[in-house]
Length: 162
Image (cartoon, rainbow, N blue to C red):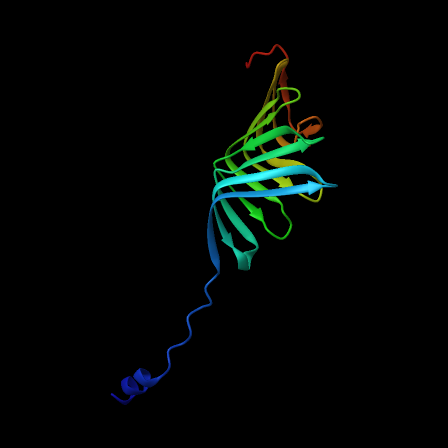
């Protein structure tokens, strides 16, 4: 009984510090370089985890610009942005459309690294262009797909997917 009474009198330990989280609807973030837009990130909803320097994204879309005009667009079902580095991870049904050469890239995850300005993935990639289809695994590319390195590739140049 004494143990029970002593236990009842002890102070309860403080609950673990809760992580601060905010929810945003119709999030829009922009990055510019020398007064020109570089990219815009939009998401239907974003869940900001301040303590982790991360925002989880619902239905994100990234648009990249060259000379003030859109050069490519990336859409995905989900993703996350690192609020400290501005790196963006796009995941699930990722699609990149390049407006200049009509390239269409699909993959499951894609990372935009702000420091290098490159898109990367280690997953399977399919790139459809007017002159053919290229498949591979692992990619490093400029956001407009004008320059890329694709590992383990297979190309079909007839324009038809075989």
